[in-house]
Amino acid sequence: MARRLLSIVIPSYNEQGNIEHTAEVVTRIMQENNIPFEMVFVNDGSTDKTWDKLTELCRVNPHAVAVNFSRNFGKEAAIFAGLKTARGDAVVLMDCDLQHPPETIVEMYDIWSNNDIDIVEGRKKSRGKEKGIYKAFSIWFYKLIGDSSGLDMRDASDFKLLDRSVVDSLNEMPERLTFFRAMSSWVGFKTEKVYFEVAERAEGESKWSVKALFDYAVNSITSFTSAPLYMIMGIGIITFIISVILGIQTLVNKLLGQSAAGFSTVIILQLLTSSIIMFSLGIIGHYLAKIYEEIKKRPRFIIRSVIRNGREQSGEKDDT
Image 1 (cartoon, rainbow, N blue to C red):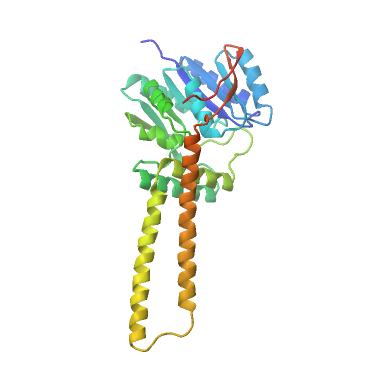
Image 2 (tube, rainbow, N blue to C red; image 1 turned 45 degrees about the vertical axis):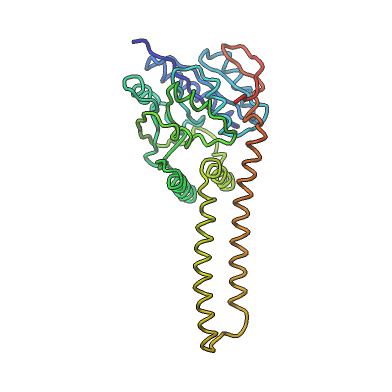
């Protein structure tokens, strides 16, 4: 049976030191295993020489395709630009720093080719030498997403193989604010899991700061689930119960002539309720901002140019 084309989408942001090595390793492994493939690198508005490296790569490697954004739109946009550009019967998402081991792609491809499987999901055996704060943050984040959405997001990653039918389904989804890891699980389809060890970065450092991770978590949660809005209702119910208990206590003390002097309790209650109200308004405001972003219907990304088969052509905006 003829081997089907595999597209490997590789979002790239300031990865000038990894482009050549990543392309070399992926090309070697795919050729050794007789897998027809293309590598779709998406330059997410890099400020270093990433695009120059990709331009040169496309001249010497016939398997390389390069997509160049007009500016930095973020990894989520780069993923979906890669999905739209990819022409393979299946698509694999992987990081440019080789922390997603290319050898695992062969295992994914064989599972997909030999079985009635639509998604082969890479799960982390461990998180490597990741700092403790990042591990704790990730555990909390995926537990919150899993509990609020009903999806199993434990040890989830972007490293997965998607059949063309899954890719087409994702490309048809109209929202501008996306969370690929959850969306690729939400669409359903038959899924198989493979496990991999997170490798050391081939070169450079992670682009994710604590602030960036926090922003990513907040945006991902509010883009994919309405759980925080229901949390406001829960806080309101708890506050109401506390208020009823304190009200009864105050009334009993008043009737017994044991009312406490001063306003300490009143001040504490006012501070508590005011904080809860402001926190709740902040959550509601964030969701309103998300709605505002969606109804503007701006494109998720704008492609300045694409290099395929060694030829550069002008790009286009996302028309989802």
